[in-house]
Amino acid sequence: MNKTIIVSNRLPVSLQLKSGKFEFKASAGGLATGLGSIYKQGENLWIGWPGNAVEDRQQQVEVADELKKLKMAPVFLSKEDIELYYEGFSNETIWPAFHYFTQYINYEDAYWEAYCAVNKKFCDAILAVAEPTDTIWVHDYQLLLLPMMLREALPDATIAFFQHIPFPSYEIIRMLPWRKQLLEGMVGADLIGFHTYDDMRHFLSAVGRILGLSNESGYIQADHRLVNVDSFPMGIDYDKFAQAALSKKTLSKKKKFKDQLGDQKLLITIDRLDYSKGIPQRIRAFDKLLEEREDFHGKVSMIMVVVPSRAKVQSYMKLKKEIDTLVGRINSKYSTLNWVPIHYFYRGFPFEELSAFYSMSDIALVTPLRDGMNLVCKEFVASKTDQDGVLILSEMAGASKELVDAILVNPNDILAVKQAIIDALTMEEAERKSRIGSMQASLRRYDIFQWVDVFMDRLTHVKQKQQEFQSK
Ligand code: G6P
Image (spheres, rainbow, N blue to C red):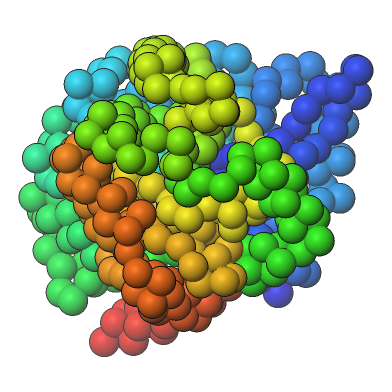
């Protein structure tokens, strides 16, 4: 009986050391929920890094035993792996390049060597449990070399790859000295998925120009194998957000927050701390609004949640300082004793509180400079069970291709973002409801479970097509 193995850099739990004992904290992410329908079945499992460096052999055995009960297997990263492969090549080379921040790319041979070595580490962990015809679904940019490593070891396995971040234009990918190896690594898969049609097109163009492989309707022929490339826009666990918004816990949090804030219009922004999210630009747009429109003072405020992330990477530290300064400047300029323009939180929140933030806010401001998909905007829409709210969404987020009823903006155009906030604040109720209503209908339908089904069905179809191709 064939099994399915899910592989990602991080496992859907994170390991925490509390008073000398290990504990696992489950990830609340939609991907973990969606893939739960796969890895929790039968012999299936999820392989990845449990977070933190566990270097003691005995502790590694204990962690592996605990994870086994959760249908997971660990790949342990040493401190050096974390520094060179995770913070280094993954987040200082690929991440900035693929998000078009070429000024932040670090071209370090030592990073590249660590990236190859850790991808090999993942490959070995998979080979320790995989049978020749198992299905292996690899996720994201930290593991671009893995599909081909697996293909070489298990030629008859079914291998899929999904990239959760953008795939940049050929002009960017060609800047990387390791571009050829990265693309070769990816084409080891039978099916390669991206969030958007544009990502897919960029990938096909890079594969054509760098590897010399042409495609026909999304099928590439590599080493006598057919590889399918397509877009699969990822959804969220819609019911979870819609139901949470009406749950007792959320309603009581919402009441408490509303009482504290009084009667004012609320804008919500939630992101990981990341330069791709356009946080400073968004704050400047809000500043512009307050500068021009005194009539909004005391009547509108922004709740800004910034979740700490990759705190050891230079560009992230620099960004944190920039945001702190900007928020300080605006709050000190406009605050009164009973009104603060920006409620700024540099920390994560429990699910019920996020749900309360979403459902009590009038406007969500989601303005990344570049984003593979962006799920925050989808979570906001799903949480607006009274259908009364407005989404302002960046054209540069993958989600903008689906959520066309949002107010779409260019996030670099501060004046346009400022105007979008004014338009959102003054939009008629009927229009607000009709826009949210139509976005809800599509998000409810194309949820995370549907995404997993569609992807897996396609994988089966690709395997059949390959067999027909080989028997010709
Ligand atoms: C993005 C990536 C994921 C990554 C996540 C959190 O969504 O696509 O692969 O896991 O950010 O980043 P981190 O570096 O904390 O894993």
